[in-house]
Figure 1 (cartoon, rainbow over the protein chains, first blue to last red):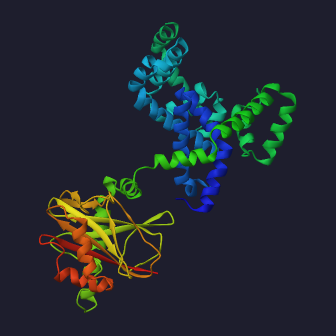
Figure 2 (cartoon, helix red, strand yellow; figure 1 turned 60 degrees about the vertical axis):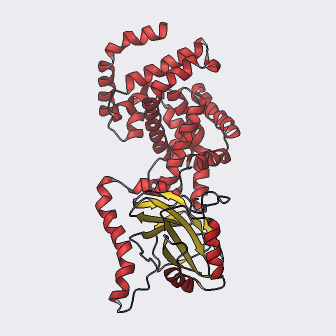
Figure 3 (tube, chains in turn cyan, orange; figure 1 turned 90 degrees about the vertical axis):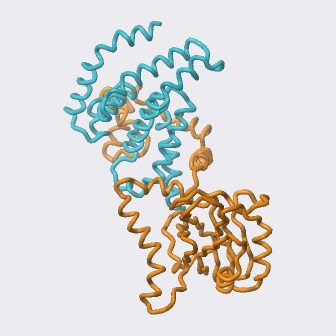
Length: 170
Length: 260
């Protein structure tokens, strides 16, 4: 049970931001249901953290960051299990599903070896489509740091390019 | 969307843009079809999402997600290795104070936490969503949820029941229709009884009894014993527990709570 004032605050935040958090999570996880689970987790976390984050400048930044980290952790946890569910499940059969799963595997395969901050910047840039100055504002990093992380990721992932193309082209 | 990035529009949409940047964004919408379309998409996405998943749906899911009992979540969240020495000190103080205080005050121990046969009893309680360590000197209200923690020196069986100021006995057991009111327990400290106690609106004192036994104890045996002392106050029943055992091998440990 949460106090009434915090309940009202949580409800307002949910109605204002949940659709955007859900969309962001769906773009990483690739599934409505998983995105809904992630959205719930983010708002449960918010309900516990509300008093502490009230003074922060942007609740949206907090939610996006929490959602991104949660989704990446889900990719890490579920990637071995999902292969069976997605490719071999009767209801999910089909080329689109396989392609979607392949993309998801690429995202997780490319992202997971990197450190947390790099992963966050990469998701903001390549999955959410934010500009470098926006990422800097969202994360509180300098633009040069954002640029450095993206360059580092691009150079480090060069060897994976062929594997990615092979995966996508079947 | 050349001058305005997605983040500017999302913050404007969320109502987070300050007055100046909101005005600039609005001005930008007049000339930028892609940004206007993105704003419209955010609006329609939100409307569709809230239709499918209103706040009530989140609350339902939240309740299911929080299926772990509150005391377990609390223990998980506070039991970090670095804090173990601090919690051990707090737990020691919690257990030791009620014993030591009467001696310090120069009177015989009449502590709310009793110790028999090496079993110890302590508790935490939840009030209005906040979870606090239990102190028998506190006054409790109707609706407070009490979770009893105990330590058992060896494996056996434990039952938990309470006797309120009106002499009414309430059993706390996972299965209300079970023949036995005890549940198996392992040896060890910081164990929790499977169910918690929600205090009712009866005023006065409520005696919480933990009954330890090497064998399961029939609920009827406890009820018969309690019937012998019906109408007596919790303090008298506590005294009776010391003299008149519920069963031959049973030992009882009690907590006396004050309710307003």
